[in-house]
Amino acid sequence: FLASMAFVAAALVQVQIDKTYPVFPAAGQSQIKLINLGGIPATVQFQPQLQNVDVAPNEATGYMTFETSTLKSLQIASEFLNKTEPLELLEGHRYTLAFKE
Image (tube, rainbow, N blue to C red; front, top):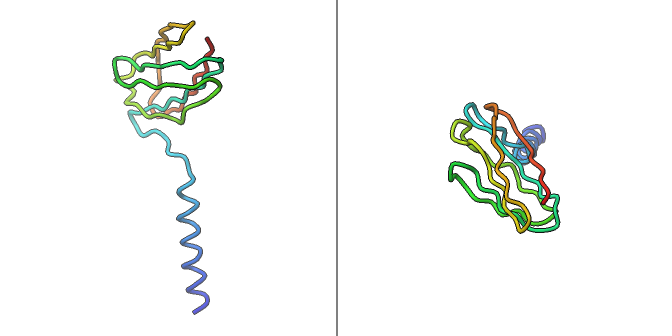
């Protein structure tokens, strides 16, 4: 009886551990994390018109998942910055983009 309870407890612990693992991009997808190193808020628009993300000063987003074939560039806009960055992403990879005004 105690042995079976130990297996049940181990299974419950494993389920909780599995929830903490990161979710990596699948085939055909890429993930991007944004970090605003500047002192003012910025808005990042993923092109062509996929999604807008507001990033507070000195803050980061979590990883966002996109279909690699549809994501062509991103535009970073803030009070002092308006910049478009072309993107050449590989499927199944994670990227971190840090920017500052």
